[in-house]
Every structure is written in structure tokens, then in C-alpha cells.
Length: 148
Image (cartoon, rainbow, N blue to C red):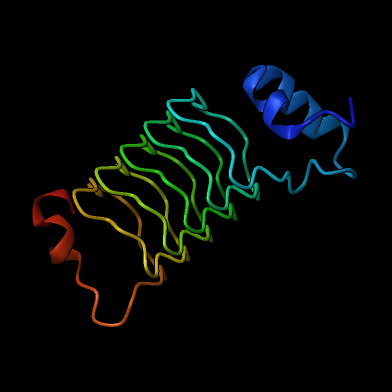
């Protein structure tokens, strides 16, 4: 089970994924490499995905509600229209991520790096943005005043 492909394991279901992460913490379970993974419309609701490398992954329309995404690396990932409501994104690397029309209601983005991220149309209603990093001159109002 230690040699299983992390993408296959994740797609096999949340229970298998989380069992593997607990059982093989010393292997790659602490930082699984899902760089460039195709997870369009994947159901990852409530999954423990902390510190996963999703660099350049396609998470468009994915259900990431209540997911543990602490320290996740989503640089240049396609997260367009993803549902990240109530997700834990503390210290997430979202540099250059496409978050257009994503739902980030009540998401905890404390300390997240959002420099270069495309947040047009994103719903940030109730999101926690303490110490989040944005591009110089960035304005929340530029996203959508009614969503913040």
C-alpha cells in the first residue's frame, strides 16, 4: 500500500486516503505529490488534504467543503468554481491559482498566500483573511463588495 499512486488512492475514496495517511505518515503521507492531478468535479468534501502538493492541478468544480487544506500547495492550480466553503486553508500557497467564481464562504485563509490569484467572482462571504498575502494595491472591493 505504501507504493500506491497518491492520485489513485485519493480517487478510491476518502476512507482509503485517510487510512493511508495515518498508516504511512513517514512515507509520503505527510506531503503527497498530486502535482498536475486531474480532479475535475472530485468529491473531496471534508477530506484531510493538509500539505498536499496540488501545484498546477485541475480542481475545477471540486467539492472541497470543510476540507483540511492547511499548508496545501495550490500554486497555479485551476480551482475555478470549486466549493471551498468552511475549508481550512491556513498558510495555503495559492499563488497564481485560478479561483474565479470559487465559493470560499467562511473559509479560513489565515496567512494564505494569494498573490497573483484570480479571485474574480469569488464568494468570500465570512472568509477569514487575517494575515493573508495579496498583491500590492489589491483591494477586496475589486473582487466583489457584496461577497465580503
